[in-house]
Length: 128
Image: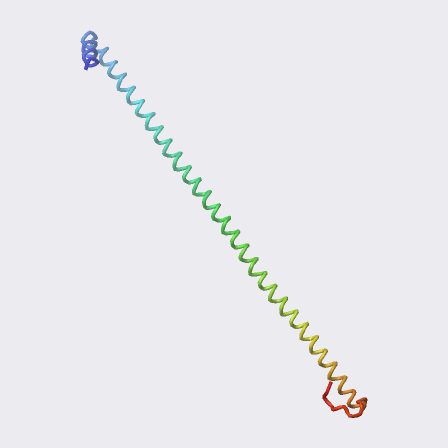
């Protein structure tokens, strides 16, 4: 309240031109302060939005990298399962081939023994 009385007394002592210039200067100062305050607010908001976009992009990159790791790991597990299955099949074929060869050899040996009469007297055919 004391400031208003001082301003009124001050304006009464000055002429119309001086009061106009003073009022214009004060209004201009308030306008400039408001303008720069708005510019600062816009800058702050823009900075927050840009940082938000950067955080989003960073999150997307992290997610894509995590997804890529998962795809590689699952693909590797699947490839390992197929390799293991093929190995088991291959080893099974080799074992079957060996067993068949042993059986064929035994059969051929018995057949040859039968045909050449290399049996011992009293041996029953088919006994090993």
